[in-house]
Image (cartoon, rainbow, N blue to C red):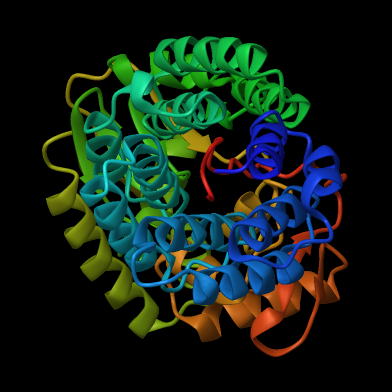
Length: 406
């Protein structure tokens, strides 16, 4: 690799895209195009970056499969950062195999880390954990180690393991310090703020208050019967009853838990579960059916007693009952939660991350846009969505380290 390419690659690895462009800005050969593409990506010019990387990949000859694979990894990372998740997993897997076959273990490890990051983004935590487990931190380029620990922290936060998340963030901060890239340090700082921010709101007999991740972890490890509206489950410690696919049953369970230790009238239950302002015989018959179903599902945790006016939740071994809800409850909260990361998401990526149809996501985005909470830019497949109340964020792009694209 010639000196200018080496100097540009080192500048990129140090997070200095302008310095890299100074070395190779006037060159049109494939290695220079690849590095210019990475530099443009680090500057946030994703469309131009993808164009340059594709030109570089086409320019590499048949004997330069590893160089072409590095371009594919960089392009897949741009797709990940710009929340265009369709097809990037397959491209990463193919590029990783080529890099491993050619002995480029550093960039192969980087591709594996990106796979884990994408899996975390779409909520496939088990697969993300397994992908991380195959990686050795020491095998990663220096800049990628921060991302590795951020993924580990993200998994721990989604698993509600506050101590593990804090430990991973400390390691991410140290890795960012060693890399000396300000954008990485900023990303670690944002993740740390997210860890310390209120995670949920507790509605209990003694009032309502915000909880951090540590508080939530302590609550769900206790013997409290928790009706968890964040995950739509009922739980006491390790015993968990999923109610995500049963919205009527969950609404009934929540109403009963919020009133505990008092009972809830049938009229209130009808209003909460069916939004029925004036109940008729059909509503009352349906309520009896749904209460029977809920009684059966909650049997490992609690009983449901009929009272003179309605029904009463009676926990088996829990000493108290609590309801856990998001800090702010509103329609389409899950979409807003994803958009709150400050990145521009495609509607297809949102649908993939939440496991719902594209039409459902489109309706949610239109409602949020009408309410002035999100905005869109671009057209067609390039259309992206962002939350309006999130300030500008530096890119989280972590690209292959030097010497990567020769």
